[in-house]
Image 1 (cartoon, rainbow, N blue to C red):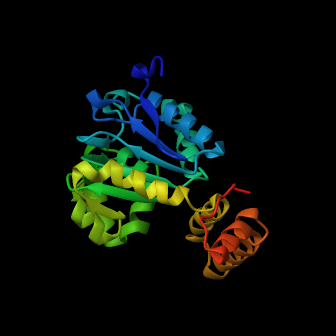
Image 2 (image 1 turned 60 degrees about the vertical axis):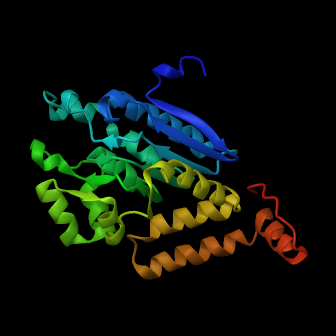
Length: 261
């Protein structure tokens, strides 16, 4: 890809229907600069609508998934300037992406990096992974879901320790607490995430998309409302070509071929 060495986010296609986004600010531990967040947003908006993409992996490098926001860029910034950056549109693109997203984490996932991982649907972490929201140490606090997602993932009392002290959680503790999907040796993190993505990509895309949407929409809704959402989505899938193909292939003992229709 021409000029990709300048890109802050690299796009690779490591397996059929799988996109891999690699954060590429290695000199700054992949700190989420405003420019990097805009590039991420553009990739997620494109991939969300890309019929050939059925699952997305996002990763950094072996030292850091993303070590927070860019502190140099924040040191002298005013509230009005932060608001003018309209960072919410960057995060919304990730949050509303219809495709399942897998974070492949090695090294530091701190501040905005931890928030980015928590935006994903699965998190595969290496033994070197460290998660935390150290914003309090800088006189600020998480602003992209850190206080809310962390509490929902690991409960109030564990979350409060990280949020109020800036402490980090290692991979084993993060797994025990329910923050991440699995822990693997560092050298297997990306390949393991890609293989899970490839497994998801073999499933009927509409069913995958509906499951993701219903889980996310239902988690904060009253249970009766969430179950109604689930039921409606489940009924709707009975009208898809992929449902017919999946069940026919099962009966005929052959591999199904899904069209996403």
